[in-house]
Length: 421
Image (cartoon, rainbow, N blue to C red):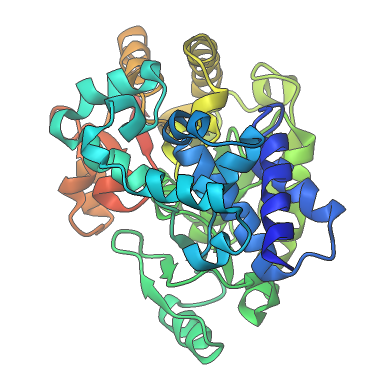
C-alpha cells in the first residue's frame, strides 16, 4: 500500500476508535474484516498506530492544534507505527516541518498530564499507592505487552513445547514465576502452529496463570470458576486437576462461554462443565451451595491492569463506573462464598490497579465473614515453589498477590485468598 493510502487508513480507523462506542480491539477487528485486502504488515501498522495514540492521547492532543488538516490525520501522524522516512513520504512540506517541531520538544518541559497520559482520577490514586514508582509504571504502560502462553500440562511438558516452538522458528523463554508459561520474543501467528492446533498451548498472561496456580485445584475436587469468561483460567484449572473431578465454568455471558468450546475441545479436557447463569444468585449456583472445594472469582472489573494491551480503557472508564463495579464485585463475592464447603478455598481476583476494587473489597469481605480466614498469599506461593514469591505480594505478612507491569512484566493483577472454617 502506498504510504499516503496507509496514513489515510490510519486516520479513518482512528476516527472510529476515538468515538469510544466500543472496545478498541473490537473496532480494529471489524475494520480488518471490512478491508480484507490489507496485508499483515499493513494491519500491524494500523493497529499499532491506533494503540500508540490511545497510550499517549493527552500528549498528542496537546500537539495536534499546532498542525493543520483533520484532527484524526494529525493524531495518526504523531502516533504512526513506522519509520520516519516512510511516514514523511506521505506528508506535505508543512506537515513534515510540524512533525519535526513536535519531535524536538523536550519531554521534561511538558506538564505532568502530558507525560503520564492518564486521566487525573486514575493518576492520583496510583501516585498515592506507588510514590516514586509511579513514573516507572507510566513507562511500562506506554509499551506494548509481551505475548505469554501457557503450556497444557495435562498433555505436554514445557521444555518439550519450547523446543518444538524453536524448531518452528518461534523463540521463547520460560516465564519467571509461573511453572506453566513461556514468553515469546515476538508475536507469531500461533493458530498456524501444530502446538496450538492440538491444544498444547493457550495464550494467557503470566499473571493470569498465577491466579489459577494460587487456586491450587487438585485431582478429584469440585471446583468453580465463577466468572469464567472465555475460559483461560478454567483450562489451566482443568489441567492442574489432571482431567479429574468436576470443574464448573460459570458466566453470565453465554457468548463468552461459547468462545471456550473450541479451546476446550483442543485441550483434551472432559472434566469441564460450562454453564451460563442469569446472575450470581442463579438456581444453578444455589444447588451447589456448601459442596465446592475451590472457588475462584475473577470478578468483572475496570481492567486497568491491562492498559498495555487495552489503552482505551483509561478513556472509557470513569470514577462512577468504578463505584458500580465495586458494588457488583461485593455481590458476586458474597454469592460465590456460599458455594464453599468447610475447609474450602476462596480466591478473589481482579486485573485492576486500584485499591477500591482490590484491597477494599477483600477487607470488607473479611470484616463481614468471621467464618472465612484470610490466608497469606506469600506463604501459599512459597509452598507452590514459585520463585521469589516474596516479591509478588503486598499487605501485612504478604497477605495479597499484587502484580505490577513495571515490577513483574505481567499485567496488573490482585488476589486475596480465604479458607472457610
